[in-house]
Image 1 (spheres, helix red, strand yellow):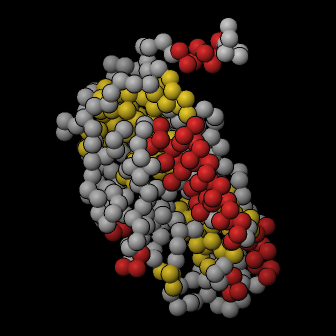
Image 2 (cartoon, helix red, strand yellow):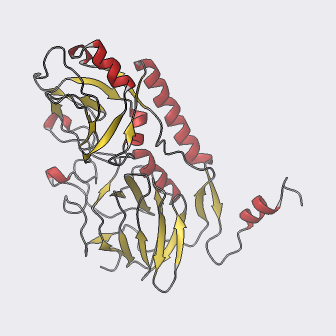
Length: 341
C-alpha cells in the first residue's frame, strides 16, 4: 500500500467509525457510529475535517501504525494517552493536538488512561466504502469499515490524501473535562411503570458499576437489583441508543451505539443524548450514578451542548507552529502579559 497506514498492532478492539448509519433501524440495521461522538468530532476538528469524517476508534487500548503515505496529519482525542512517534524521529504528542508525520514514521497509542474509548483522526479521512450512508463498522452485521470487522495486524488503512501540507498545527485552548465522575442524566421511561417506586428510587440513588460484559452494543451494570412490578416480558418494541433495559436478573443494561433495533425487556429510563458519550468513556469497573432530569431539561441540555461544540469548533483551538519552526503565537502567549512587551 503506497497511500495509507499499516496496522502494526490492532489493539483489542479497534474499528473505523463515523457519526453513524441513520435511517435504517426500520429494516433492522443499528445506527452504530462512534461510542463517544463528541471525542470523535473534536479529533476531526483538530485536523481540519468535517465532523462526519470517519475516524479510528480504539477501545481499552491503543494501536500501533506505520505511515506509508508521503505524509499525514493526525490527532488523538478522548483519552489521556499520547501519540508516541518512533523510527528515525522520536517524540510524543499529547491527546488534543495535531501533528504531521512522514512516511516511515511509526506511531503508537498505548494505554488509554481512565477512558474506555479514544479516537484517531487523519486529515482527509480514510478512503473506505460508504454503506447505507456511513463508513461505520457494525461487526455483528459485517458491514462498514474495513471488511466489516475489527482491525488486525497487517491491515492497510487507505487514506483519502497522499500527503498533508505543511501548515500550523492545532491544539485545544482549554483542558477538556471527560466527566469521569459526573452523574449520568436520564429521563424516566418509557416503561418505568413496570417497576416499583422503591426500585426506581434505588436506581436513582445507588451506585452501579460497569461490568466486564460491556461492549459497543451495551453496558451491563452491576449493583442493586431492580424489582419489577409487572413482570419483565414485553412484546418487543423499538429501542434507541441510551435506553436502559432491565431483564429478569434485575440488573440494568444500557444500550449504546450498536444496539439492536427492538427489545423485549422493560425500559426504566433513557440516558440523555448529551451523556451517552460520557458513559461511553467509562471502563469496566467504573462507577455510574444516575440522575433524573425532565424531557424539557434534556432537550435544553442537548441545545446547550450543540452550541458549546460549535463554539469549540470556531474558537476553541489555537494554532501553533510545527516542529522546527519558531512558534510566534506561543511566544506571544507565554512571554507577554498584556500584548505589550
